[in-house]
Amino acid sequence: MFDTQIYEMSQCIGITGADFSSRLSFCADSKFTQQELPAWKPLLTPAIVIGTFSLIGVVFIPIGLASLSASQEIVELVDQYDVECVPADDKVSFIQDSKTDKACTRTITVPKPMKGPIQIYYQMDNFYQNHRRYVKSRSDEQLRDKGSAHLVKTCEPEGTSEAGAPIVPCGLIAWSLFNDTYTFSVNKKTVEVNKKNIAWGSDKSSKFGSDVYPSNFQKGGLIGGGHLNEKIPLSEQEDLIVWMRTAALPTFRKLYGRIEADIMASDEVTVVIQNNYNTYSFGGTKALVLSTTSWIGGKNNFIGVAYMAVGGISLLVALAFVGLNVVKPRTLGDPSYLSWNKESPDYLH
Image (cartoon, rainbow, N blue to C red; front, top):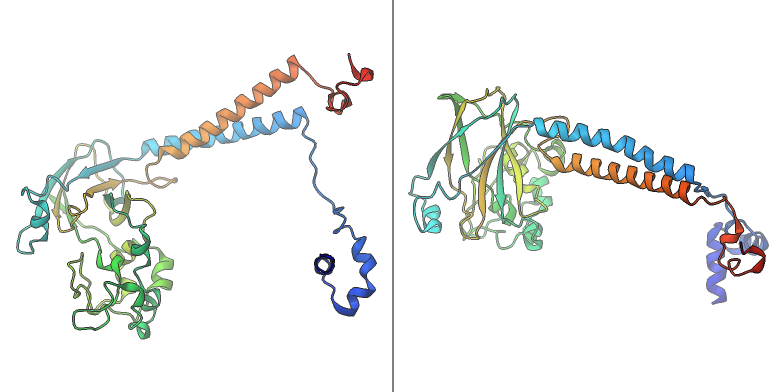
């Protein structure tokens, strides 16, 4: 016990060996070991407490109002198409039949003007990308370096093809790549979808190699999702990069592309969907989302409401302290409020 205390004391001021023995008394009496170092000890007077809560309320409420106003100005259109785009009763057999034409046409009427760029998302529900085995089923070394193509141990059951060759990119995440496609026209005029720069720049430059090309992809024993162009390096396959950034919740959106043109109110947006992705086997849903953006990002009322709630509560607390200080004031530093003095006859009032 004594040796442990001596060792901890020596570590507190960084001395050892002979140097320690010569400065033992200094260490024992130092401000550090005696817990006498300078510290900030704020005096929470009524004025400071009331002022702090009032300041929080005055700052947070305007931020909340601005955030809520920006969110309300965002135009967001959500169209769930997974049910309507499958005419057959046996949806799983329909979606797995490679010979069946899965084209589906949807028409969306725009209620408010949408200023470009308009973000295009696909939304999925009941898809647990955060499942531990799913998240681990990838090889980051393989994605970065073409010399690591053989590192597929963590990718089972999608590590090697039926012929035993390594799959690049391997793993369940890449294997389940989303492969629905969307073609847009506004008032019967075709609109181009910009699919450049939809992935994080850091992912493209650091996580996916410019000299790594797909090989043996979707050639395993299981039916997967989308295919990749083997002539394009992984760092330029942005649909894959977006998909490989797994979602934390079972309901999520991922960026598909952007429409750079403006869309006016009452315009009709026609979407031709190739409904290829199988969400029917696990009871998932799919939806297409068109959304404008603002300085807070996409539509999100929660941020504004949260700021306003915190600001409002802070103001109410400040008012409560004001009332308490007026109705029942206390003298600062009055020792009569100490528990051991409350029963003393000298302090009874």
